[in-house]
Image (cartoon, rainbow, N blue to C red; front, side, top):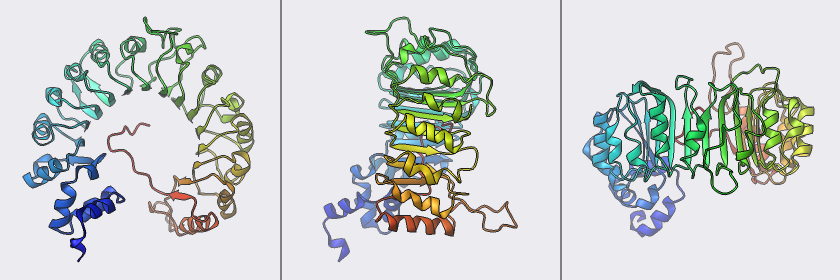
Length: 428
């Protein structure tokens, strides 16, 4: 009787299922397997992780091809594996190579529709990046994370500079790449709006660090989102002038114990137009709380702070809508005051250990809150054995979540585990 329902109705129902549920439904019978596999729209945005490709048979590859899978993460791959991918999924638009096992990748030139490419944790040094320029007419997002190179830095710069359509670039390394002149790359990547850059090799940023030789119009970069990893560099307000369009800044400080000078103060004084700010490590919030841009709508703080510092921040950012609060010290006295300090919050990420039941349930007072994420949803069930950790919500947390949802009439969605994009970098 169930199978007699129109296919259109089943496909509409499947639109509401998660990826995991869709895959489970495929396994129930041949009817649903055929129905789901032949519906390309159901699998838009679906990513598959492949490892040890030799174990996959022809029916498996055929099922991926039927679903028009366009996003793949390949682990511990070699060139022959890319040739297999090219045979079955030639129209890939997103590819991540994790722990690539060879020094060259000429096969990448043959993926004519590849818009997003990511390399992560490749211990075998890449001898050449000659595969990048042929992708210059399609590639819009490139991530290179913890990859070793045997080619000179000039070759890396030249290859990146030919990717004129890039809107997003991530380059994360351990310092072995050396001091790369960022301005040379920015001069060629005129469409770049997102940049994530390792700063471990920089100590003093020159006045022209963000200033390419030729910039049209007012001389401002198109960058909207900037992430700085392992940052501890002196900078002047003059050097930051080309970042007048920047709306999002994330700073991951190099040292947990900060130096005498807080370089972040210069950034905040120069970029008062920011709407999104994320700070990890570095100086305590007290050092720069009174410099936070009043335009901020989203704030992430993984730093040392006290309740009085949050009071200062709340005055500076009265319209804050999104807050991530992960203080280095205990947050036991901070969660309870959030409704008074930031009444316009729509999303909130917190740690709940050491937070009292009363303070946790005070979050019901946030009238605009629709999403709460608890980032420390693990627990230790046996006080006598602290090494035993269960990475699931504790009975106490489950009870608190249930009580909060009842108090808010289920207005607030509570998340205890978030899913990462399988193609994203884990550095950030």
